[in-house]
Length: 141
Image (cartoon, rainbow, N blue to C red; front, side, top):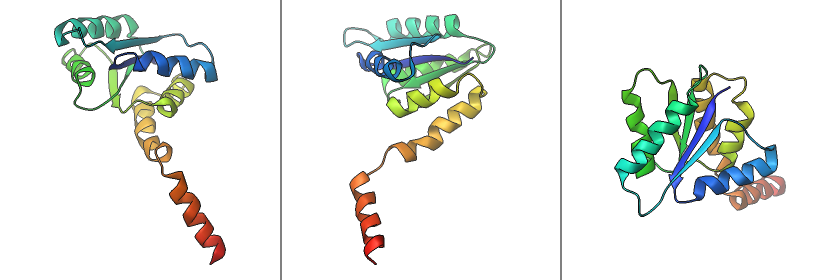
């Protein structure tokens, strides 16, 4: 099973996991790290390093981070310097992404799961009113 490490600003990751577990149940092999305003990048880097090393499995570690270019993402990307670790990073973590990761990590390889999360982004971030209006236009035509 792929381990999951959620790396975000503040308490966002804790809340995402709490919501996800309310839907799919309690999850094993998930670690949440939140960068607090009082923390420096170096201290946060050590926490991320520890989490990745402790969560490392033969199936790998999936790091879900909040935004590309932010400190949590930059710190997570520094882990790639260690060739002994098998992990991947996906940015833009949200509830649908986390649910997909938790539901598929038992039987998909890490790279395939990471790509599934990226491919699913456009299906989960939509303008539903626009879709409804387009649907109504098609019905009326």
